[in-house]
Length: 281
Image (cartoon, rainbow, N blue to C red; front, top):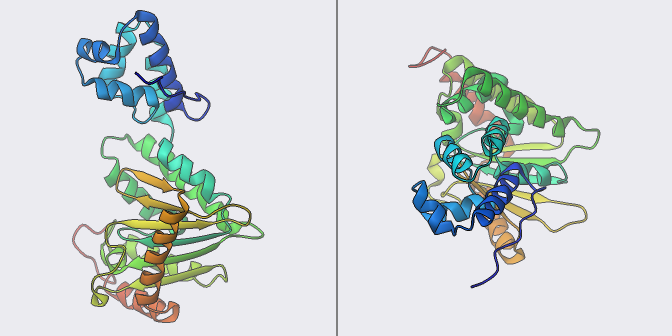
């Protein structure tokens, strides 16, 4: 049997949680399967908890705490994990984002966080986290807006965004919120380090239809790609894979409307939000 993978508890709260579960389980003399049977959950879930790849639901964490005699330590740590505004997979991306000299993004469903207004961000986070309290949502909104400081640096990174037409058509938050958000995108695009394009529906199929894609470039490090879903993300570092994702982005970039035509397209879309629409605020 191969030796268990070594974990660095300093990398994240989830990793610290996993190290503690493994240590307590080993001390109890149980296998992952035996511990899983006692809860009961699949032993593969125990493995994911111990690797820091997954955080257990609250009731499972409470059961682990009791079974392993953690005396509340696991429950306390679980609370800290859940209070953190960004999950581990987002924080790994943000660490790279903060050091990037250029960012190229294709956004399939929403305006990127770096260009979101407060009201738009709040609506996205409210819908994406229906279980969260109002205070938790506000904490997430503040954390998201704080990231926009990247673009206010004396030497900001290049931000080149391709927005799918769906992004500017879906009335997130209603007419007023969308008009404000689209106007803000246009205003941001006036900066020399920000470019915005629109991928219109009329362009048909394209190479990044599966979801959003971000490419980060650095002055003294290899480029990385980031593939984002609704509740998960994957940071890609393999050079061959990054090159392929870059090629996919280049194809989308070439098919999209020019920056000038995109601005006109967004202004036209704003006219559609000039009157109240269903669910508007």
